Length: 136
Image (cartoon, rainbow, N blue to C red; front, side, top):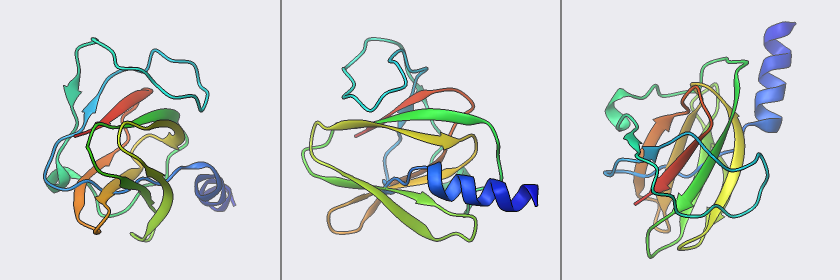
């Protein structure tokens, strides 16, 4: 029963992101409140998240909630999708160039960012802390 509740909660709450292929995404502890407002550029040092090769093909069960702030630094729109427990991408948000938004998810959940033509730019697993995902 607990597994079913986690699955339902994750599907209802975990935001999707569009996969980004070929580039790395940077993560940093988020220093913005847990709201859906636009984020601003920061000078905080960033660490690189794992590339697509090191990421699972589906999201694992997790009960550790985190907030990801997706920031599109490209000059084109991207789609943000969550990869569900069966490995299917679930669309969450289209981001215009320069747009940002905050998404609640769970540690280890897999996200994908894709360009307008469907090319995967990046695939990564959510870290254990609130983080910014800089799409570039």
